[in-house]
Image: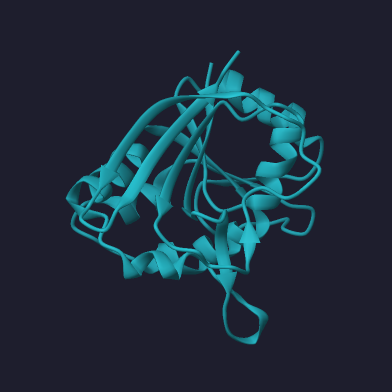
Amino acid sequence: MGTVAVTEFISIDGVIQDPGGAGEYDRGGWSFEYDRGEEGDEFKLGELNAADAQLLGRITYEAFAAAWPTMEDEQGFAERMNSMPKYVVSTTITDPEWENTTVISGNVPEEVKKLKDQFDGDILIAGSAKLIQSLVEDDLVDEWRLMVFPTIIGEGKRLFEGGLPRRKLKLTGDRELGPDGIRLLTYERAD
């Protein structure tokens, strides 16, 4: 059975996207002000290579689909992003252009359960706060990988908004990445 794993760059005040110019969101651009070191880069590459698929909300999908198809790197991150199976939750996207993308347009909890049955490895979710919040409501998130940056953003899209049900987690990993005090915290369901 697959594992739904949330992977986020997050400030200590819970922001994953801070307000940018013209009402747009800076998709974690503040994180580039910090050095996560080789171990941080290795973690992100290893996490992606170990995953079977990605699950994305529409806004994150559109940002990724606009950027990744034209990127190249020596480590193979871009190639893996482009070639792996991707599932976008959307009622407006009908014909995705990014290769290996399937649209989930209805009954998201049931479709995510099918993905968990289909894959044995990780189903990664990055960004996609609204989707993550709905999956928390349906108790479908198995693991949290939070790369916590030592900054307070103050405003912006938070990973957790009010009204979510209580979920008990257990800490399964805690390590420092790079010289700037970034912490990688990993949590799993406590049950």
